View 1 (cartoon, rainbow, N blue to C red):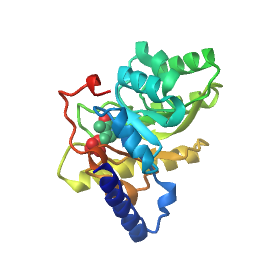
View 2: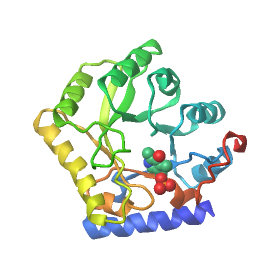
View 3: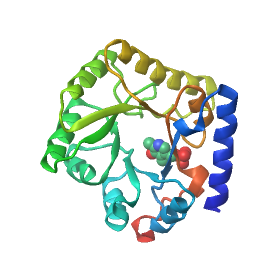
View 4: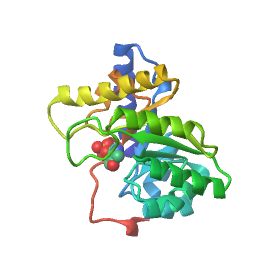
Length: 233
Ligand SMILES: *Cc1c(COP(=O)(O)O)cnc(C)c1O
């Protein structure tokens, strides 16, 4: 089932890329494996997807203990300061940096283990109260500038979660905001490669608006069963 899902996902990505004149090679699929186990990850790996996303530090930890660097790990969940140490230990990318304090803590922990930690800034691109992320543009520029000087942190890009709505225009607006922000940062001397945006329900719009990383769970693994936690490992 996972193989079939990935095949049709790739078809949809390719089709959209042709329409908007983009190269599918420049779009990375991150398989969001939260609430799924190591078996599903191995099955996905067989299909040639090497990037996996987790949103809880302890789940990432457990899966990392099992799979190590066989795959590329992306931490995509809200990050608390006291969990930074664990996440830096296992994640190749941290997508959810939403304050200068967290960036500094990441740098400190990365320095301790002699690592350059790739991070993305999570940006709040809609008015939804529940979404976390940085919304003030000056603050974003300040943090980005600060990260430039950090030795053990590399700012790779920006990440956002679109608002939960059926209104495609609002979703597009949110992705456009992130893409424009990347351009604004460029004119401030901050050059970023990655735009992490688009999930199962909105990845096609995200491709149209310039996404380079899609975070896809349901379209690969099927519906998540939230009662089923780490015992699936
Ligand atoms: C769960 C999750 C996803 C994947 O969601 P799907 O709709 O299942 O594709 C993407 N990004 C984040 C931050 C998530 O928490």
